[in-house]
Length: 290
Image 1 (tube, rainbow, N blue to C red):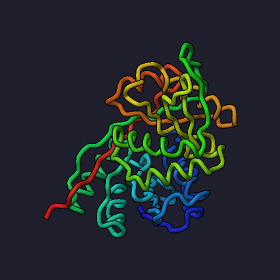
Image 2 (cartoon, helix red, strand yellow):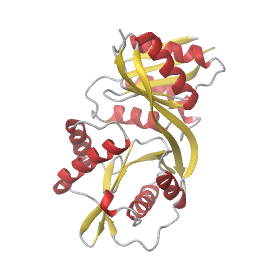
Image 3 (cartoon, helix red, strand yellow):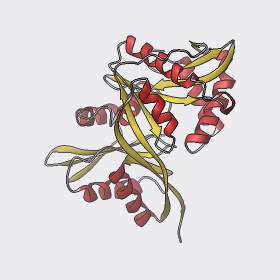
């Protein structure tokens, strides 16, 4: 068993894409991040890119786009412990600390425990998430309003809602990170990434975004509705209409991640046609022990 680390994104993608595509939905975040790395400069720091091979075949992939978490694929071998330990030990040669890891449940737990042992960063469970895939949209009826494409005039609202979303759902982005994401999406090819807003009587009531192209799909996110206008179907209608738009443009699938502790979001996405695929866990790393 051997770990190989890369600096060239295109070369790395050539080596791992076939493995990742065997489970495209499960690996939509990895595939989407690789696509972003190839086609844009949204990330300011060089990525960590490695895979583990056994008998000449890829059995696991690890990718980090700083300042975000390490992301690890499914592990295609019975000896998961050896594979994950190899990734953790190699990552320690690159990073003094990590903010966290996102991976399939058993893989994520194994990496977090290994990282805590070798790096002394205390771990704590983060989000437990579910990956969904949609091929056919079930329309949402009876919701007031319509979808529109934002312009640069909406920049400040998009930034504030991005910060509100990450504060609720994830570790909060810095304003600089939120500004960069918004600016890149507003200026990008709308076939690749962007935002949509839902308006009700000229008032903006919900936000949804999309990015992370895979060979056959695209990932939905973030999705945010301010607390004072929730439970009126705005997010459901917006995601349904935007998903249909993306399918009409030639995507075979749409993917998204949900927080398993939020039964409402898991229910509403299924009502518009999203089907559960697999579960992933996040672990966050804190201070290092002496």
